[in-house]
Image (cartoon, rainbow, N blue to C red; front, side):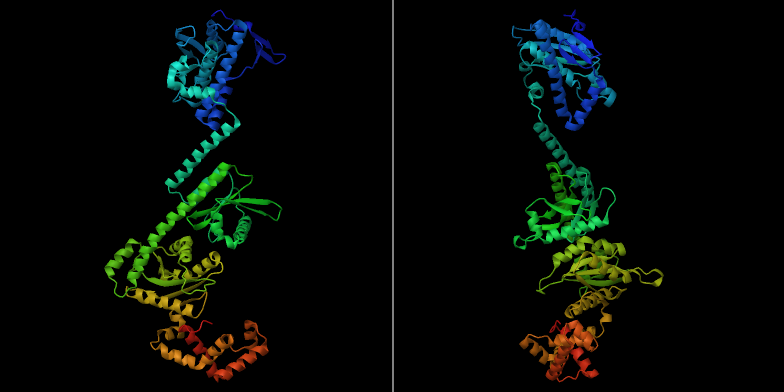
Length: 632
């Protein structure tokens, strides 16, 4: 067989662009092309799948050459020796047979050992990637297995034991029947018999990418990454814009590919708000409806007739909705991208839950400290020590503020808004205040936000205490549309005893404004003047009797006739007894207003043209408000 001459079978027709081996067409190919193919397969499919593809490629090549030899020379076992010769003539490398044993007519004990020298696969691998940690001659092992199997009439498996690609001198291999290998070659048999089709490949790719995605997302969670890092990672995965809206439709995190367009973002917010508002009320809240669907789609048209499509994934833990994760869908996302979006929304929810737990502990500790600080007889040293642990120095001057968030509609005054306030604090206020004045203390106390603001006094001027009310007001207007905030404060705390009195004053000021029905007021207890004095009065029963002696006829008339004479009187006095201004504010015709005022004078005996009677009426109205007998 060593006299076999492949030249007799080769035919070159360069003028026709044809090379053939016997009747099989051939092509000349650079070994670097195969090396690049291997690289692309590994990158696209992973090492295991790529190895199987190239093993089967070599196996089919070996089978084809063996069948060509058998067709032209016969299928006797002796022609199996032509395999190494053809392999060498093709430039794959030199084959050395070290040991060959054949037992029985059916070759059930066929066993051969050999080595490849100058293997092109090993050579290219080392040149391009350095030494491997595993054998790399996948095409060669497949070729040897396929060629031998044709002549042996049964499955022959070639296994590479050492490889020049791993740094060994040569590539040593061993060939046996699959039966004689036992379980050792299960993977090789799988590689041979595996039927690769698009569905198999797509499924395996999705499974592999899903595993990679899970690893990437899990790593983000284990590393304690925040929402912004989660958003950036998701944006890289899906190659698109990602925006997180909180439950107030503010944007705590965003990744916008290209230049961020504020107009587009505002339009997106507006369409999301409309989308949520259109949820059918009978089916529950928008959050609950979204919860039933892991993701949903939002689509709208821009002014330039461009259609925008966004995936919405609610950020939820249990029944609580923290916000919404939106991803722009340029083209319809594959299932894997949708899975990534769901993973990201879950991670965002876990991050929010972690922040909530941390803030709950912080607020509880600060609330406990405030409770002790504002109690009747606090232990100075003990309170100071606890305050220092929270980064709060009682020896510095502070101002105590109470921020009272007023619900737009609150039919039940006993129904507090703790959850809303908690979200409000968690969203931004804690950071906002500590950015303004580090070392300040923020806590939640009975539906109100209590702020012990550290005062900075550069050049003897109090700066941040003047900035604080306006800063909070702007924040509320920007982030809590439709809500109002009363911001009040007590005396400046320069000594330990001042804290209790300052808190009492601020709290009373908040109560007074609430009883008066005032919204969006910024004032101190001292500035409330007569309201504060009346509130401090020890004989409230006497004040009540005085006010009712003048206004009880109006209260009784309003109850009996379902009218609002007292409210009209209050409006008239607030507008400095101006008929036109009052009529406009009350949406009344001026003659109707004159009739009502005349009826009031008849019922009460007041003469509203007299300054004294007007003062008595206004004082009585304020007393009833302070005492809680009239809400306006």
